[in-house]
Image (cartoon, rainbow, N blue to C red; front, side, top):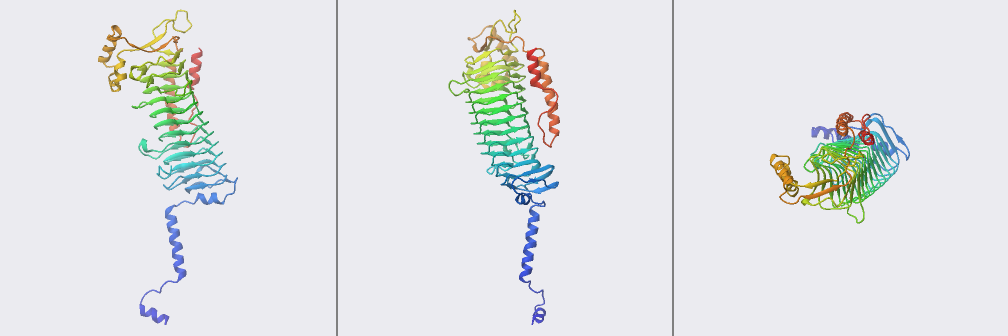
Length: 468
């Protein structure tokens, strides 16, 4: 009957149940292979026990990977985890995880999900010597404490600046150390609702905000190098922050500024070098809390547009020992108001014309800055385009010669420095050139690094020159 039926049908016999099962398995394997040609890193993590050190053979592994136990993954610079354009590359949902010597690449593109190189949702984790590229966000810390983010090289996806993800993002995260990272072509580094974090010795270029604080208190920002970003450091509603010994250069766009504050109180801004920025420092209703001061000491603001800009007539800032040199305008206050309710003492002003007869390097007469024709573009900002033009120069000269109306006193420094230091301009120019050279070297290093280079130390040179 069987052979007769087969002969009668003239076709192939129908497959049995075993053949269907084999076909399904083969199709499943084919689909899995099409989804990722790489071995799974998740399988290695799942097979590990808490405390294990995972050292995968060199090569590329498939992500995303979720780590929910305290393990170490060390790629020794020879292991890549590729998320295949889906989700974050690594999710850390445990305490005590270490990631080291890995390349994390090809995250998804979801802003809602914060697709990142690494999402951290635990404490006491260490992320070091990682290369994170083609990832929407770099490292995202959410409600994470006591983590170390060190010596990583981070870049975003090749999108327009405003739609790139952030390089490093702290959200409700406390007591973390973010140090020695190299950041290229990401959007911002942001610190929101986070306190007691250290951000030190990072090198960031080609972004929007080098560092942006929102509602974040008692953080320290020390020894960072920020260059060719739209904005250097901006503090919003963030009190008790220390910003010390940072180098900020060429924040020169329409909204470019070196350091800015909005409704921010009790901060220390000291020892920073701010070069070639559209606005060196920008203050908006700061300090905001009653009976507090902002201490702005020993900074260099040079070769920019406006050295210091106040959005309003405010008080509570102390400016001491700062060097204001080579800027188009020293200090402006929106609306033609005054900055004289702040304390100005012992600053160097390159346009000071007084004498120092007793040789103590303190000018014998106060430095006084008046607003003459400058009031035109202070009141009408687009008119700044014409600053330096023959018309405004003549108008300013006539205003000084025979004022049409009494000029406004912008500020008075009763103890101006006559000489900032011997060779100050040489120092600033050498600093700028050396930092540019260091930037080229750092840009060639795609395998991580501290973002710092040996050689000329601008801040040390400044301190030495001021002591001479």
